Amino acid sequence: MRENGTRAKLAAGATVAGLIVPVAAPVVVDLAGLVGFDFVLIDTEHGHLGFEAAEHLVRAAEAAGVTPLARPSSNTPAEILRLLDLGVQGVMIPQITTEAEAERAVRATKFHPRGERGLASSRAAGYGLVEPQAAYVDRANAETMVIALIEHIDAVARLDAIIAVDGIDVLFIGASDLAQSMGHPGHADHADVQRVVDQIIDRGLAAGRVVGVNATSAEAARVYAERGVRFFCLSPWHHAAEAWRGYLTALPGRQTAPR
Image 1 (cartoon, rainbow, N blue to C red):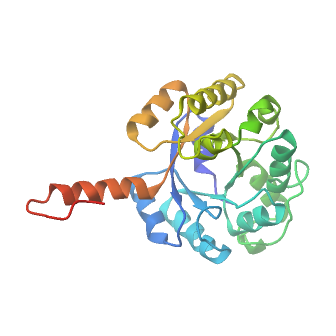
Image 2 (cartoon, helix red, strand yellow):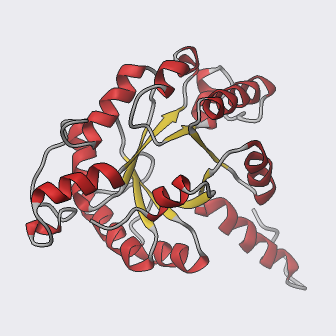
Image 3 (cartoon, helix red, strand yellow):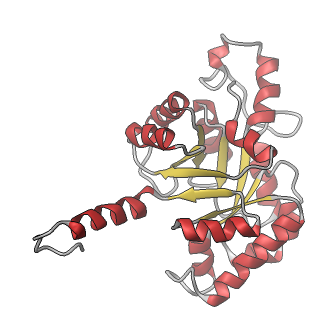
């Protein structure tokens, strides 16, 4: 099994950033590697990706030198297993609201003795041709990341217990769904939501956890980084659209305004 470069960078105290990939387009992964992202997040929750398409994205990530991570659609051991067997080196589990759900995610991701992940000669295991299965188990347990997605207000009351679950590598804040759960859908910038985001960051960092966020601009990322956040995700669409609009706006003589 390959070394998880993103996990190694976090362990060394570095900040990492990754591109969310919700479409079956290996070229996006190629570009992420060329630009210098540390990882890609293969999004099977909000994207339209099936397992076959996700496997091609994992291959592209390996070729591009970026860590393949994935977000399953739910905290379901069978779905998590299929993604890990493809070669994904970490999973971002949505809607973690209790310590029991966090524990379930870890146990689905890790082999014995920490977990109950199914074991087979999968692609991730080199089809059983690269190393003894016992050696693969040890390396997979050491290299595979679990990212708990905190995106509901109910999780905040149980946050300390969630943070305490052994095996959680990153506490990631999903501000959009958090805002929705607080009665402010579409308003992640609402003052009440931001107060809760700040609270999650503070409590996570105080417990020694790596904290992650989506940051829609370099300035927002800088502010979060100065607070101690070290794991960043970026959607490709917002920034691509802004760059294209800027190009079109700058062209002399164009009559059609960007939508």
